[in-house]
Length: 216
Image (tube, rainbow, N blue to C red; front, side, top):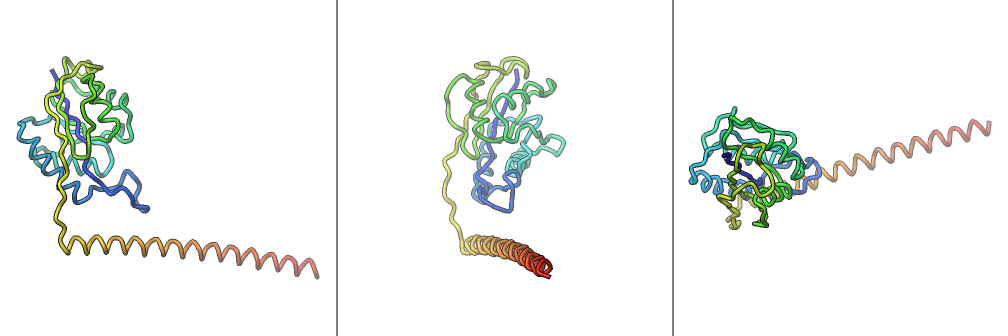
């Protein structure tokens, strides 16, 4: 008998032209939600032997919050490249390849694959794993036996987000970040415009020079 914990990362910064998808961090609200979720998970007295996380920054931060609350050390938290932008079958392959010496493993990943895997293993349309959600499954047999309908759902936590009270410091910091991003975009635009104008000017110069030489 094996225990598989599926965790979806918290809310994160979706739009940032200067940061690729894999590097986008959790929002303040996302961290707040995960701290509360980790507390509820810890109350179940289930301690994973290993936490496997996607290489994305938001999943890494999610895993750190759970790991800290559960008192895990660095050797019990690993990154698995296959979990980023993975489909259900790819995550299932990761599960099948887990070391049989491990009895309880937590996977921290992304939707829609995590929800799809949950529905596949329990053979039921239960609930979509929203941000900062987790599901605890009992697998009948070994890791390689994880298959359609071969698992039982032990716990499901899909929290309802509660709005946070934002003070003037947070509002100012948010305003400052937005202004910096606008300034950076304006600088990039001006630099690109100058490059285009320089190239156009050089083309005009050499074009005119060529005409003069031909005329001579």
